[in-house]
Image (tube, rainbow, N blue to C red; front, side, top):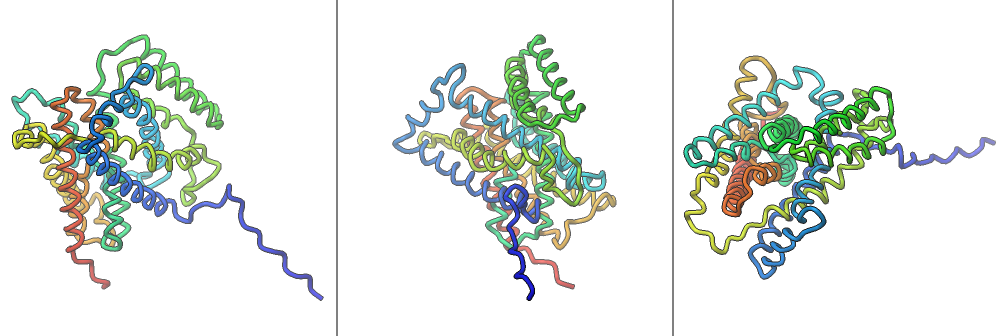
Length: 400
Protein backbone atom coordinates (compact mmCIF):
# COMPACT_ATOMS: atom_id res chain seq x y z
CA UNK A 1 0.00 0.00 0.00
CA UNK A 2 1.41 3.34 -1.07
CA UNK A 3 1.90 5.96 1.64
CA UNK A 4 -0.34 9.02 1.35
CA UNK A 5 1.24 11.90 -0.58
CA UNK A 6 3.03 14.45 1.53
CA UNK A 7 1.01 17.62 2.09
CA UNK A 8 1.99 20.58 -0.07
CA UNK A 9 3.44 23.28 2.13
CA UNK A 10 2.90 26.94 1.33
CA UNK A 11 5.96 28.98 0.57
CA UNK A 12 7.22 30.99 3.52
CA UNK A 13 6.01 34.56 3.50
CA UNK A 14 9.57 35.76 3.18
CA UNK A 15 10.01 34.29 -0.31
CA UNK A 16 6.45 34.57 -1.60
CA UNK A 17 6.90 37.32 -4.19
CA UNK A 18 4.52 38.96 -6.68
CA UNK A 19 4.49 37.26 -10.06
CA UNK A 20 5.16 40.47 -11.95
CA UNK A 21 7.20 43.32 -10.51
CA UNK A 22 6.05 45.69 -13.22
CA UNK A 23 2.37 44.87 -12.77
CA UNK A 24 2.70 45.17 -9.00
CA UNK A 25 4.42 48.55 -9.32
CA UNK A 26 1.79 49.87 -11.71
CA UNK A 27 -1.03 48.69 -9.46
CA UNK A 28 0.42 50.26 -6.30
CA UNK A 29 1.28 53.53 -8.08
CA UNK A 30 -2.23 53.74 -9.51
CA UNK A 31 -3.82 53.11 -6.11
CA UNK A 32 -1.51 55.71 -4.58
CA UNK A 33 -2.56 58.18 -7.26
CA UNK A 34 -6.22 57.72 -6.40
CA UNK A 35 -5.44 58.29 -2.70
CA UNK A 36 -3.43 61.38 -3.64
CA UNK A 37 -6.42 62.75 -5.57
CA UNK A 38 -8.57 62.27 -2.47
CA UNK A 39 -5.95 63.99 -0.25
CA UNK A 40 -5.76 66.98 -2.61
CA UNK A 41 -9.54 67.28 -2.75
CA UNK A 42 -9.73 67.08 1.05
CA UNK A 43 -7.07 69.82 1.38
CA UNK A 44 -9.14 72.13 -0.84
CA UNK A 45 -12.29 71.42 1.18
CA UNK A 46 -10.55 72.03 4.51
CA UNK A 47 -8.78 75.20 3.29
CA UNK A 48 -12.13 76.64 2.23
CA UNK A 49 -14.28 75.46 5.13
CA UNK A 50 -14.67 76.10 8.85
CA UNK A 51 -11.36 74.32 9.55
CA UNK A 52 -9.34 76.69 7.33
CA UNK A 53 -7.73 78.62 10.18
CA UNK A 54 -6.79 75.46 12.10
CA UNK A 55 -5.36 73.98 8.88
CA UNK A 56 -3.11 76.99 8.27
CA UNK A 57 -2.02 77.28 11.92
CA UNK A 58 -1.29 73.56 12.13
CA UNK A 59 1.01 73.63 9.10
CA UNK A 60 2.95 76.65 10.40
CA UNK A 61 3.18 75.45 14.01
CA UNK A 62 6.74 75.05 15.27
CA UNK A 63 7.92 71.50 15.89
CA UNK A 64 11.47 71.73 17.17
CA UNK A 65 13.75 73.58 14.75
CA UNK A 66 11.23 73.62 11.86
CA UNK A 67 7.53 74.06 11.22
CA UNK A 68 5.22 71.10 10.62
CA UNK A 69 5.13 71.89 6.89
CA UNK A 70 8.93 72.05 6.72
CA UNK A 71 9.20 68.67 8.44
CA UNK A 72 6.84 67.27 5.80
CA UNK A 73 8.58 68.92 2.83
CA UNK A 74 12.19 68.51 3.99
CA UNK A 75 11.91 65.44 6.22
CA UNK A 76 9.19 63.09 4.99
CA UNK A 77 9.89 63.97 1.37
CA UNK A 78 13.49 62.84 1.81
CA UNK A 79 11.97 59.34 2.03
CA UNK A 80 10.12 59.99 -1.23
CA UNK A 81 13.37 61.03 -2.92
CA UNK A 82 15.12 57.97 -1.47
CA UNK A 83 12.47 55.80 -3.15
CA UNK A 84 12.86 57.80 -6.38
CA UNK A 85 16.62 57.20 -6.27
CA UNK A 86 16.15 53.48 -5.66
CA UNK A 87 13.75 53.26 -8.62
CA UNK A 88 16.16 55.15 -10.88
CA UNK A 89 19.08 52.90 -9.93
CA UNK A 90 17.03 49.69 -10.26
CA UNK A 91 15.62 50.65 -13.64
CA UNK A 92 19.05 51.74 -14.94
CA UNK A 93 20.85 48.57 -13.82
CA UNK A 94 18.17 45.90 -13.65
CA UNK A 95 15.00 47.12 -15.36
CA UNK A 96 13.41 48.93 -18.26
CA UNK A 97 16.27 51.43 -18.68
CA UNK A 98 19.04 48.83 -18.55
CA UNK A 99 20.31 49.34 -22.12
CA UNK A 100 20.75 52.46 -24.21
CA UNK A 101 18.02 51.44 -26.70
CA UNK A 102 15.65 51.06 -23.73
CA UNK A 103 16.58 54.55 -22.50
CA UNK A 104 16.34 56.40 -25.80
CA UNK A 105 12.57 56.69 -26.22
CA UNK A 106 11.60 57.66 -22.65
CA UNK A 107 14.76 59.76 -22.43
CA UNK A 108 13.85 61.80 -25.52
CA UNK A 109 10.25 62.16 -24.35
CA UNK A 110 11.28 63.24 -20.86
CA UNK A 111 13.83 65.80 -22.08
CA UNK A 112 11.32 67.31 -24.50
CA UNK A 113 8.71 67.20 -21.76
CA UNK A 114 10.98 69.27 -19.50
CA UNK A 115 12.29 71.78 -22.05
CA UNK A 116 8.96 72.78 -23.63
CA UNK A 117 7.12 73.59 -20.34
CA UNK A 118 10.12 75.60 -19.11
CA UNK A 119 10.04 77.59 -22.35
CA UNK A 120 6.29 78.20 -22.10
CA UNK A 121 6.63 79.39 -18.49
CA UNK A 122 9.51 81.69 -19.46
CA UNK A 123 7.48 83.28 -22.28
CA UNK A 124 4.66 84.10 -19.85
CA UNK A 125 7.01 85.51 -17.20
CA UNK A 126 9.51 87.56 -19.21
CA UNK A 127 9.98 90.89 -17.44
CA UNK A 128 7.75 89.88 -14.51
CA UNK A 129 10.61 89.10 -12.12
CA UNK A 130 9.31 85.57 -11.58
CA UNK A 131 11.58 83.53 -13.87
CA UNK A 132 12.79 81.61 -10.80
CA UNK A 133 9.75 79.36 -11.18
CA UNK A 134 10.72 78.07 -14.65
CA UNK A 135 11.16 74.48 -13.42
CA UNK A 136 7.75 74.18 -11.74
CA UNK A 137 5.84 72.85 -14.79
CA UNK A 138 8.63 70.51 -15.93
CA UNK A 139 7.70 67.56 -13.67
CA UNK A 140 5.26 64.67 -14.11
CA UNK A 141 3.45 63.08 -11.17
CA UNK A 142 3.61 59.37 -11.96
CA UNK A 143 1.23 58.30 -9.18
CA UNK A 144 -1.46 60.82 -10.21
CA UNK A 145 -1.09 60.00 -13.93
CA UNK A 146 -1.24 56.23 -13.35
CA UNK A 147 -4.24 56.81 -11.09
CA UNK A 148 -6.07 58.39 -14.03
CA UNK A 149 -5.04 55.48 -16.28
CA UNK A 150 -6.32 53.04 -13.66
CA UNK A 151 -9.76 54.64 -13.89
CA UNK A 152 -9.75 53.98 -17.64
CA UNK A 153 -9.16 50.23 -17.26
CA UNK A 154 -8.31 48.46 -20.52
CA UNK A 155 -8.63 51.65 -22.57
CA UNK A 156 -4.86 52.07 -22.12
CA UNK A 157 -2.64 49.07 -22.96
CA UNK A 158 -0.03 48.01 -20.39
CA UNK A 159 2.75 49.13 -22.76
CA UNK A 160 1.56 52.74 -22.41
CA UNK A 161 1.54 52.49 -18.61
CA UNK A 162 5.09 51.11 -18.68
CA UNK A 163 6.16 53.86 -21.09
CA UNK A 164 4.59 56.54 -18.87
CA UNK A 165 6.35 55.23 -15.77
CA UNK A 166 9.71 55.10 -17.64
CA UNK A 167 9.28 58.72 -18.81
CA UNK A 168 8.41 59.77 -15.26
CA UNK A 169 11.52 58.04 -13.85
CA UNK A 170 13.80 59.95 -16.26
CA UNK A 171 11.75 63.06 -15.49
CA UNK A 172 12.33 62.56 -11.75
CA UNK A 173 16.07 62.29 -12.35
CA UNK A 174 15.96 65.60 -14.20
CA UNK A 175 13.98 67.19 -11.36
CA UNK A 176 16.57 66.06 -8.79
CA UNK A 177 19.37 67.61 -10.86
CA UNK A 178 17.39 70.84 -11.24
CA UNK A 179 16.74 71.05 -7.48
CA UNK A 180 20.42 70.46 -6.67
CA UNK A 181 21.71 72.99 -9.22
CA UNK A 182 19.12 75.76 -9.20
CA UNK A 183 17.32 75.68 -5.86
CA UNK A 184 20.20 75.58 -3.41
CA UNK A 185 21.67 78.71 -1.85
CA UNK A 186 24.05 79.96 0.84
CA UNK A 187 26.31 76.91 0.66
CA UNK A 188 28.31 76.06 3.79
CA UNK A 189 31.68 74.63 2.73
CA UNK A 190 32.35 72.85 6.03
CA UNK A 191 28.96 71.09 6.01
CA UNK A 192 29.46 70.17 2.36
CA UNK A 193 32.84 68.64 3.21
CA UNK A 194 31.32 66.58 6.03
CA UNK A 195 28.45 65.53 3.75
CA UNK A 196 31.01 64.42 1.14
CA UNK A 197 32.77 62.39 3.86
CA UNK A 198 29.50 60.70 4.83
CA UNK A 199 28.77 59.95 1.16
CA UNK A 200 32.28 58.55 0.71
CA UNK A 201 31.70 56.30 3.73
CA UNK A 202 28.49 55.00 2.16
CA UNK A 203 30.31 54.37 -1.10
CA UNK A 204 33.04 52.55 0.82
CA UNK A 205 30.49 50.24 2.44
CA UNK A 206 29.09 49.46 -1.00
CA UNK A 207 32.51 48.73 -2.50
CA UNK A 208 33.37 46.49 0.47
CA UNK A 209 30.30 44.36 -0.25
CA UNK A 210 28.59 45.37 3.01
CA UNK A 211 24.86 44.61 2.74
CA UNK A 212 23.43 45.38 6.21
CA UNK A 213 20.77 47.99 5.44
CA UNK A 214 20.53 49.61 8.93
CA UNK A 215 24.14 50.84 8.54
CA UNK A 216 23.24 52.55 5.26
CA UNK A 217 20.12 54.11 6.77
CA UNK A 218 21.99 55.39 9.83
CA UNK A 219 24.72 56.97 7.71
CA UNK A 220 21.98 58.25 5.41
CA UNK A 221 20.37 60.07 8.33
CA UNK A 222 23.73 61.72 9.10
CA UNK A 223 24.03 62.65 5.43
CA UNK A 224 20.52 64.19 5.47
CA UNK A 225 21.36 66.42 8.47
CA UNK A 226 24.63 67.56 6.88
CA UNK A 227 23.04 68.26 3.49
CA UNK A 228 20.21 70.17 5.20
CA UNK A 229 22.75 72.38 6.98
CA UNK A 230 24.95 72.77 3.90
CA UNK A 231 22.43 74.81 1.89
CA UNK A 232 21.65 72.10 -0.66
CA UNK A 233 18.05 70.98 -0.37
CA UNK A 234 17.89 68.11 2.11
CA UNK A 235 15.85 65.80 -0.12
CA UNK A 236 18.86 65.44 -2.45
CA UNK A 237 20.39 63.37 0.38
CA UNK A 238 17.72 60.73 -0.24
CA UNK A 239 18.82 60.26 -3.85
CA UNK A 240 22.52 60.22 -2.92
CA UNK A 241 21.85 57.54 -0.30
CA UNK A 242 19.89 55.46 -2.82
CA UNK A 243 22.78 55.45 -5.28
CA UNK A 244 25.03 53.78 -2.68
CA UNK A 245 22.62 51.01 -1.65
CA UNK A 246 23.90 47.66 -3.07
CA UNK A 247 21.89 45.92 -5.74
CA UNK A 248 22.15 42.33 -6.97
CA UNK A 249 21.58 42.57 -10.72
CA UNK A 250 19.36 39.70 -11.82
CA UNK A 251 17.54 40.28 -15.14
CA UNK A 252 14.38 38.19 -15.27
CA UNK A 253 14.21 38.04 -11.45
CA UNK A 254 13.41 41.63 -10.47
CA UNK A 255 12.05 40.49 -7.10
CA UNK A 256 15.36 38.98 -5.89
CA UNK A 257 15.06 38.86 -2.08
CA UNK A 258 18.85 38.76 -1.69
CA UNK A 259 19.26 42.24 -3.20
CA UNK A 260 19.46 44.97 -0.50
CA UNK A 261 18.11 47.62 -2.89
CA UNK A 262 15.08 45.54 -3.81
CA UNK A 263 14.37 44.79 -0.13
CA UNK A 264 14.58 48.46 0.85
CA UNK A 265 12.44 49.54 -2.09
CA UNK A 266 9.71 47.04 -1.22
CA UNK A 267 9.80 48.07 2.44
CA UNK A 268 9.60 51.79 1.64
CA UNK A 269 7.10 51.79 -1.23
CA UNK A 270 3.87 51.25 0.77
CA UNK A 271 4.80 53.94 3.34
CA UNK A 272 5.72 56.48 0.66
CA UNK A 273 2.79 55.69 -1.62
CA UNK A 274 0.04 55.47 0.97
CA UNK A 275 1.29 57.84 3.68
CA UNK A 276 4.06 60.29 2.75
CA UNK A 277 2.72 61.44 -0.64
CA UNK A 278 -0.91 61.83 0.54
CA UNK A 279 0.31 63.77 3.61
CA UNK A 280 2.42 65.99 1.35
CA UNK A 281 -0.55 66.51 -0.97
CA UNK A 282 -2.84 67.40 1.92
CA UNK A 283 -0.26 69.83 3.37
CA UNK A 284 0.47 71.58 0.07
CA UNK A 285 -2.68 71.50 -2.07
CA UNK A 286 -4.88 73.57 0.23
CA UNK A 287 -5.44 76.99 -1.32
CA UNK A 288 -7.95 79.51 -0.01
CA UNK A 289 -10.34 80.32 -2.85
CA UNK A 290 -12.61 82.62 -0.85
CA UNK A 291 -10.96 85.85 -1.98
CA UNK A 292 -10.05 84.62 -5.43
CA UNK A 293 -10.41 87.19 -8.20
CA UNK A 294 -9.98 87.08 -11.93
CA UNK A 295 -6.66 88.89 -11.57
CA UNK A 296 -5.24 85.97 -9.54
CA UNK A 297 -5.99 83.60 -12.40
CA UNK A 298 -4.16 85.69 -15.00
CA UNK A 299 -0.98 86.33 -13.05
CA UNK A 300 2.13 85.42 -15.08
CA UNK A 301 3.11 82.69 -12.57
CA UNK A 302 -0.34 81.08 -12.63
CA UNK A 303 -0.66 81.22 -16.41
CA UNK A 304 2.93 80.14 -16.99
CA UNK A 305 2.58 77.04 -14.81
CA UNK A 306 -0.89 76.07 -16.09
CA UNK A 307 0.07 76.56 -19.75
CA UNK A 308 3.45 74.91 -19.21
CA UNK A 309 1.85 71.79 -17.76
CA UNK A 310 -1.11 71.58 -20.12
CA UNK A 311 0.38 72.82 -23.40
CA UNK A 312 4.14 72.55 -22.95
CA UNK A 313 4.20 69.02 -21.54
CA UNK A 314 2.03 67.42 -24.20
CA UNK A 315 3.85 69.24 -27.01
CA UNK A 316 7.31 68.41 -25.68
CA UNK A 317 6.62 64.75 -24.92
CA UNK A 318 4.66 63.94 -28.09
CA UNK A 319 6.90 65.85 -30.52
CA UNK A 320 10.06 64.32 -29.01
CA UNK A 321 8.53 60.86 -29.19
CA UNK A 322 7.49 61.24 -32.84
CA UNK A 323 10.97 62.55 -33.69
CA UNK A 324 12.69 59.66 -31.90
CA UNK A 325 10.55 57.08 -33.72
CA UNK A 326 11.11 58.84 -37.07
CA UNK A 327 14.87 58.73 -36.48
CA UNK A 328 14.68 55.01 -35.74
CA UNK A 329 15.73 55.43 -32.11
CA UNK A 330 12.78 53.43 -30.82
CA UNK A 331 9.34 52.08 -31.61
CA UNK A 332 5.87 53.22 -30.67
CA UNK A 333 4.63 51.39 -27.53
CA UNK A 334 3.19 48.00 -28.49
CA UNK A 335 -0.53 47.69 -29.26
CA UNK A 336 -1.04 51.45 -28.92
CA UNK A 337 -2.22 53.92 -31.58
CA UNK A 338 -0.70 57.36 -31.98
CA UNK A 339 -3.94 58.81 -30.60
CA UNK A 340 -3.48 56.77 -27.42
CA UNK A 341 0.16 57.81 -27.19
CA UNK A 342 -0.95 61.43 -27.52
CA UNK A 343 -3.45 60.90 -24.71
CA UNK A 344 -0.65 59.68 -22.45
CA UNK A 345 1.51 62.65 -23.50
CA UNK A 346 -1.29 64.93 -22.31
CA UNK A 347 -1.44 63.02 -19.00
CA UNK A 348 2.25 63.85 -18.52
CA UNK A 349 1.03 67.38 -17.77
CA UNK A 350 -0.18 66.17 -14.37
CA UNK A 351 2.67 67.62 -12.36
CA UNK A 352 1.10 67.72 -8.94
CA UNK A 353 3.58 66.41 -6.34
CA UNK A 354 6.93 67.45 -7.82
CA UNK A 355 5.54 70.72 -9.24
CA UNK A 356 4.20 71.78 -5.84
CA UNK A 357 7.49 70.74 -4.27
CA UNK A 358 9.60 72.82 -6.69
CA UNK A 359 7.11 75.68 -6.36
CA UNK A 360 7.74 75.75 -2.62
CA UNK A 361 11.47 76.05 -3.29
CA UNK A 362 11.06 78.75 -5.95
CA UNK A 363 8.72 81.10 -4.05
CA UNK A 364 8.27 81.67 -0.33
CA UNK A 365 5.87 84.64 -0.23
CA UNK A 366 2.13 83.98 0.20
CA UNK A 367 1.07 85.71 -3.01
CA UNK A 368 3.29 83.62 -5.24
CA UNK A 369 2.60 80.46 -3.21
CA UNK A 370 -1.10 80.87 -4.03
CA UNK A 371 -0.31 81.52 -7.69
CA UNK A 372 1.84 78.36 -7.80
CA UNK A 373 -0.90 76.22 -6.28
CA UNK A 374 -3.56 77.63 -8.62
CA UNK A 375 -1.33 77.06 -11.66
CA UNK A 376 -0.41 73.52 -10.64
CA UNK A 377 -4.00 72.57 -9.81
CA UNK A 378 -5.38 74.11 -13.03
CA UNK A 379 -2.69 72.66 -15.32
CA UNK A 380 -2.83 69.22 -13.70
CA UNK A 381 -6.64 69.11 -13.75
CA UNK A 382 -6.81 70.14 -17.41
CA UNK A 383 -4.16 67.58 -18.35
CA UNK A 384 -5.89 64.81 -16.41
CA UNK A 385 -9.34 65.51 -17.85
CA UNK A 386 -8.16 66.06 -21.43
CA UNK A 387 -5.83 63.05 -21.40
CA UNK A 388 -8.58 60.81 -20.04
CA UNK A 389 -11.05 62.10 -22.65
CA UNK A 390 -8.60 61.43 -25.50
CA UNK A 391 -7.95 57.89 -24.28
CA UNK A 392 -11.68 57.25 -23.90
CA UNK A 393 -12.44 58.20 -27.50
CA UNK A 394 -9.21 56.92 -29.07
CA UNK A 395 -9.73 53.89 -31.28
CA UNK A 396 -7.90 50.75 -30.28
CA UNK A 397 -5.54 49.16 -32.82
CA UNK A 398 -7.09 46.38 -34.91
CA UNK A 399 -6.24 42.82 -33.92
CA UNK A 400 -4.74 42.15 -37.31
